[in-house]
Amino acid sequence: MNNFEINPCKACFEKFKNGNCSINNINNCCYTTLAAYKGNPSINSFRNSPEGQNCAQCLKNAIQMYGNSTCDLRLTASPVFDINNHYFPGLLAKYQDVEKAKSECIEMCKQNPNSYYTCVDNCMTDASAVQIKEKFTYSRPNFYSY
Image (cartoon, rainbow, N blue to C red):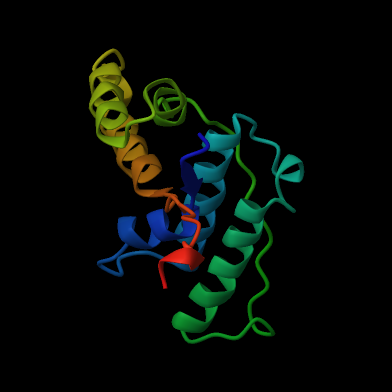
């Protein structure tokens, strides 16, 4: 996934943009989304990664946004117990196309009728975490044209 960066904070704030959530919802969402991309529910394996730092900073911002301070409320990384039904990260790696991966992800959720809505929610949240990297192209200046 060299063309993409993962921003779980952005995805979780989009998921809860109507404000109908608590700080714990943001905490759980951020670390669960990140665990799905890392393919490992162990927070210790990615706590110090750039994406793990993204979640830590996200929670600091959310604490302040909800009118608390980091002195009043100290959250630690939310434990992740289950990363089932997170098909999107693997599909993104396979297709390198966000829309195609999202569409396929939703199709795969139909195989899980008992958890269909949770699965689709995971697809949408995981897709929202993707940021396409800007491609930098360097063109050598032509000093002789002046």
